[in-house]
Length: 315
Image (cartoon, rainbow, N blue to C red):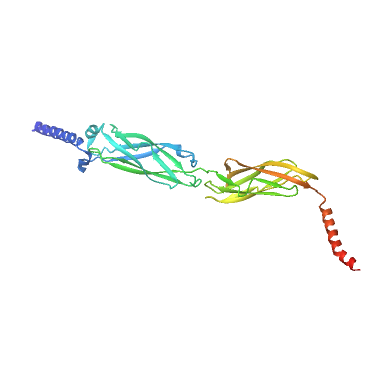
């Protein structure tokens, strides 16, 4: 009787193993839920994303690690051993992202091979680029969906994770000259050059202006700074130049260069590249400094004589 019971148990075990062998060969869509084994997916990445991403120019690449874990459940080690070596297709997709962000997965289809310890990993990379209008130090995001297909007795599973990052401050200005950068004036006159500057950066910006070179006999001053709002804010600075006005005839010429450097309005340590504009001023004509009062008095005397002369003629 005892031998018959042992033989029956052995038969049941062999039958169970044969059933599982058959199920392993069944297509994924045909595997029944009664014998399904649960699995999970986990997506992680390194610290490549901690540093802010520079808009426009930088392409940041980070490695995604996809871990697939099979739950042992109640079917025992025998069933899991039969599944070792099975190939599970994994797909990685970007389902959503900040509107000013572009993200691309280098390899969107992967394969995981089931391991005896039920934990398998694969890797891929994702590249991130942000546009010029990405808000400086604002929060950006990418939603990544990992999907494992159903394979034999192993249920399919998916996991969606959110990867967050920060755009760097992009200092970028565009100067333009609404009039000209060349003027001819008299030695007693003043040349005024307007400089219009547009903020193409991604934060409120202060533009620091400076005259970098001018001869000692010339006098040149400029608006020291402009505050430009984010998103195409504009402002106008003015360069004012006075030529030498020493006594005599002048045939002078001077080239003046102006520097413009953008900095983040609330953090002067964040600076952009310096931009330059060059101006040419020509001074032509006579200069009679100090004689202005004499000309005024002479003109006054002439006017008085013209007023008095008719009265003397009448007498």
